[in-house]
Image 1 (cartoon, helix red, strand yellow):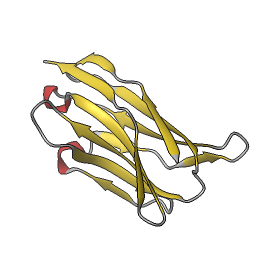
Image 2 (cartoon, rainbow, N blue to C red):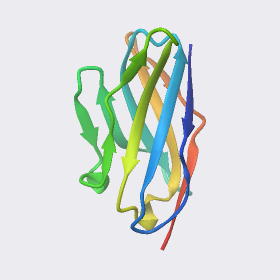
Image 3 (cartoon, rainbow, N blue to C red):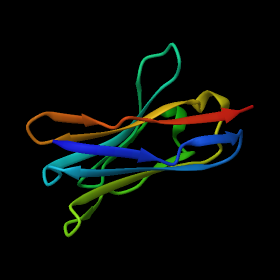
Image 4 (cartoon, rainbow, N blue to C red):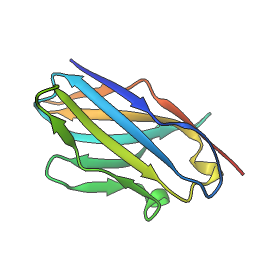
Amino acid sequence: QVQLVESGGGLVQAGGSLRLSCAGSGTIFDINVMGWYRQAPGKQRELVATMSDGGTTNYADSVKGRFTISRISRDNVKNLVTVFLQMNSLKAEDTAVYYCKADRFGGFTHWGQGTQVTVSP
């Protein structure tokens, strides 16, 4: 099992910035992709950005040039894995609950509990 904990959400004015953090613990040795997804009220959960262990990124068109996902960082002593999402030039339409996701070899997928991001116009 993998436990993912997100933090860093909050209320920000349009044009502002936030940095989301995701910390993973548990069976993390075979995590090969981590990413961020978001779900706005009344909408389906959508991809924001992903990062592979090899450094390959994938961004939603709506966030390209504004959001940056970090490389996956591993602390083998503490058995932790972390990934960050730097969000700049935030817009009201970025308001959503942001979820961290980790994919492991064998098709296992794990989700965090989510963190609320609210951007005021």
